[in-house]
Image 1 (cartoon, rainbow, N blue to C red):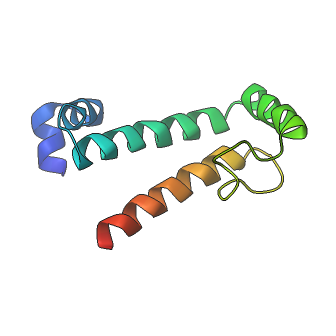
Image 2 (image 1 turned 180 degrees about the vertical axis):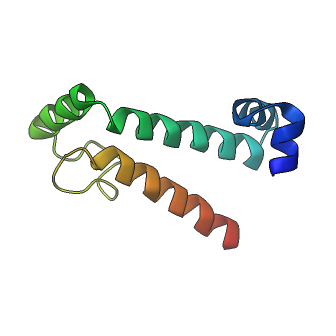
Length: 94
């Protein structure tokens, strides 16, 4: 992987390259972008507060019931990113 990243220039270029290929390469690229966004926003207190307020009204948004922990805190989005990564790794092995 590091040789491909070196050849393309950086990880962003790798993800863009993968996204141009249908199927698993595109899925992996988009999952890594999502994971990066979740990690980025989990470090922003305003986002965590907004998510906490949303979850007070809708504790488990449709489709996320099995993935969100009951309480929303600064670890919630990072935890979701970790679960996505775990699912991606599991599917590759399975």
